Image (cartoon, rainbow, N blue to C red):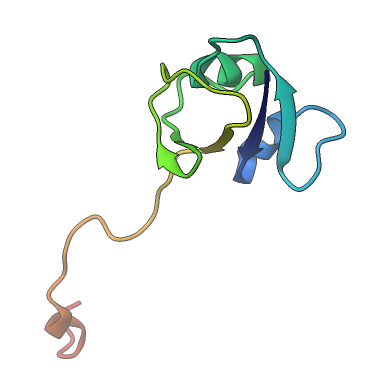
Length: 94
């Protein structure tokens, strides 16, 4: 069966040669899972990933169906880790 795989940011480097626009169509065996696809592409197993199948959150063990679109994002980070009082920046306490 075939599935489309979209890899984002640094993960795009793991797409097969000749892939375009961050995506590739892969032939996978019936019963293949998200984890099988990630392994086949050589994605680092030790990195937490955000995975969507057809736009919905998916677990690594989720089986895939023909025509599914698998989107895999590298770990997301950024933003402020603690909430700050917004008035602190106005009165010089920031």
